[in-house]
Amino acid sequence: MSVTDTLLDLEDQLWRANREGDGSFYAHWLRDDALAVSKYGILDKATAVPGIQANHNPYLKTPRTDEKVIVVDDHTAIVTYRVEVTVLLDGQEAQFPSYASTVWNNGSGEWRVVFHQQTAL
Image (cartoon, rainbow, N blue to C red):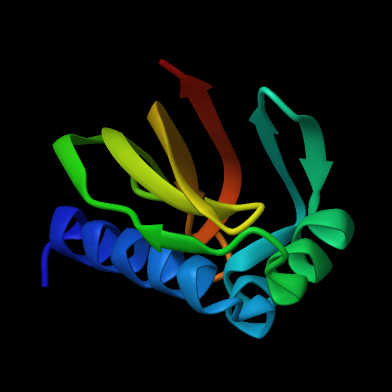
């Protein structure tokens, strides 16, 4: 499988785990020093994993378009795309379209998330 195919598949799995509240999946695939940036602030792994596990505002749909993968070097790649997040917020479906980027690193021999950002549209 190519780097592009591998990382796009991992992005699929991350969004599925988010929809399902599978914090253990994130605990494995995020590096210990991973950070995420969104309109809600800066989250580290220790904060993100329990938040995903709690799943208070479940993501219902997360289709992605305009995906691009930039391989920086043998150990680093960036995935960018647009994501149309549908979330259950106070019992109502709400739309949160965003642009997103994920920086991946495989210095440990396995691709792991170093950084993720979402820019709300």
